[in-house]
Image (cartoon, rainbow, N blue to C red; front, side, top):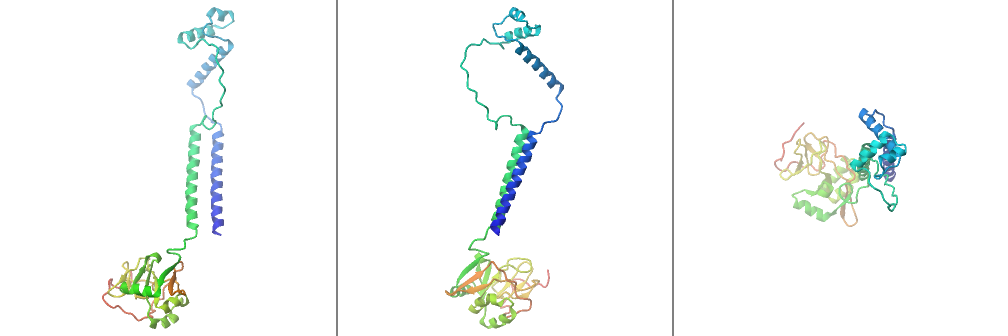
Length: 303
């Protein structure tokens, strides 16, 4: 499905580019409509007269006025000969080796300003479509097999518990944008009846841990831990959550969101960060944990 969508976008971009180029080429071939200046018309007529005079009789530097008169030349032709002789326009010609004719490159001959601008517009339009197409393809391309948005192997349960203890009750995994904390064994049964999403997190809770999304469900701020209260406390609007992400205070509409968890045969915790589960409703308290010390941020009942 994604591959077909990408191919469709590329085909549409090429059709639009070719249609634009064809339209601009048709404009290049349209006849110009306008009026020549009087001075230009006068010069053109003079050039035609001179060309006609030159074509009516062959002259060179050795031709004399008498010979022109004898040949039936007009007075204008005689005057032209005299003027060209004085200015050096006529030179004696001798035998020469003919040079092979090389036709000029039609791409470089007669490129008008309109053609140059049209070609520039088509080029810039093509570059713009290429950039837009590349952005669409990058957006639609399947995500990689690691990092946020994929299944992450956090490590063995024993190592995770050690990391939680070393972090003072909290273990942050930046690769998955999540907090991993201890889930008390006495709260598993309450979670089974209180969490509608219990089957998706069952293996992790039974193993004694839970994986929480770092974002506050109120307005999306990143929620840090508070070592003194052993809660999560949002610095933006004062929402507070116990150590397993259940709401304790503030304007948040629910507890912290979380990720599905499973434990493999090697006793390793696998967290699927591609799926975000909405946190438990307000009032759910499976662990009974209260603040174990001063709060880092005062509780707030509204904005």
